[in-house]
Length: 341
Image 1 (cartoon, rainbow, N blue to C red):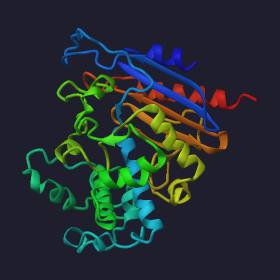
Image 2 (image 1 turned 90 degrees about the horizontal axis):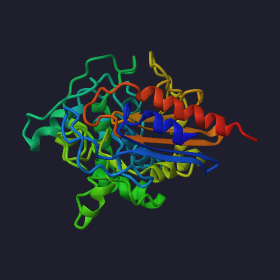
Image 3 (image 1 turned 60 degrees about the horizontal axis):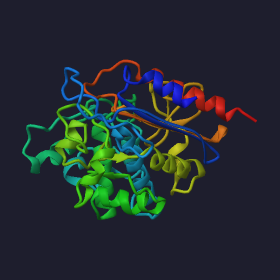
Image 4 (image 1 turned 60 degrees about the vertical axis):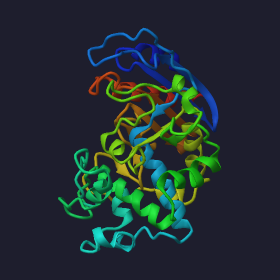
């Protein structure tokens, strides 16, 4: 049972965890374990108040945000406002006018030849996005596969230009509001009255405040970026996964079909990984994504499964061992549940 799996992993692997397994959209198992804020410092000093994780707890999704960015881009493509195979220079002439062979499809499959990260902490705030967009190509365009946050930040900026709105507004208007994802947003305590939600938010590393994005580059960009920054609950993320499974979002089939990507450690769709051994366990044809904070979403249409795992594995420090085993244990439990008559 999920409860046993999560109990065995807290607090040794993760301080807090919430997991959901759905079959045909119906919750088959759900569990929450651990404490949302367990430590006060990087040395592991226990906090005097340690709120328990609940099913409605809010976690930093980290790179699971990439699927939402992809959903926005595909909605724009479905409306003819964006062509996946047009040059990125169409929207970014100042930064990509000299590299017209790069397309949004390259960005979404991590084959644009862009380096994995580009830290801009020491760059003046007004220049940070331009600095990232000017990141040079360091590998061949078209492959081999090179996982890059820079590419997804660039894709997010293209979406803003094509959609004529900030990325957070595009995600809200095109994904979270239509799907009824009330707890999914960037900067979860950024609006008046949101302080009441602090008690639901899982802490990440100790140098970050509650509700402050963990990822350094997303933080430098103000908390909204194409590669990271979204916060959500397990039920919201499950509902999003179900929309992918059922194909109710625009061009979902294009997102989830296998694209030829050289030397990737798994098969690749647009913005999603297919059969990623780090998260799918025995669900070898499942697609989805993981996040650095210890989150993951996987969808397996063949077994009618949607599986969510939210954790704060980086609290109080990154590099805690065991998160891969936890993800695969949850996936294995889902496979067992999905096999029942």
